[in-house]
Length: 200
Image (cartoon, rainbow, N blue to C red; front, side, top):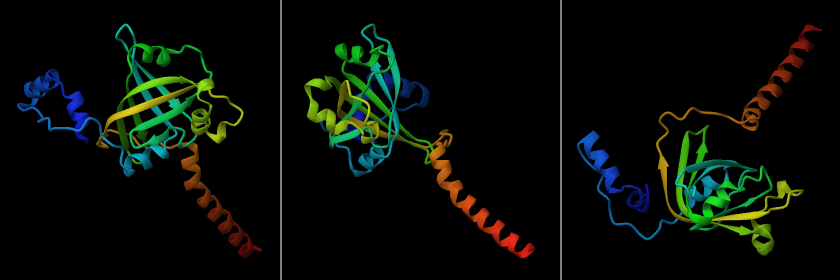
């Protein structure tokens, strides 16, 4: 766990709850202004094909949205900044509107097969893709060649935290299952051919 994450979220109320239920409260160490994403976090982010984005509405309600795309669609701009392209969808604009009044976000990234999760705290802004064509091109996945980005979400990372694997149920995409099953199919086909030759 990065120190800035602890320093940011362990409020007096949280520490009081820890003290009440467990008889002790975490010690909040000095922390830098923000934590740098290391090679481990960068490698993890580069292989994600989805994440959850939490924002806060003007009326104070939390809102969580799923974001998905090809692996690596969440781009590292540098060790302190992430970005992704946003396309036309249901046109509700909830996350975009929320960020106009409160720029705080949490990103929640999951790797279900390996039972790993990464939480990221940051400040986000939404840019009109028409006004930032170079950045739009940089974050636009080539797999979405026919789509046109409407907005760019840029997240200035404050901190991050890795969670333990407890209670994460392993889940696999059809692509991940296919990677395991296809060699077995080939081996079965090979054995069936061998068996057929022996039966002739």
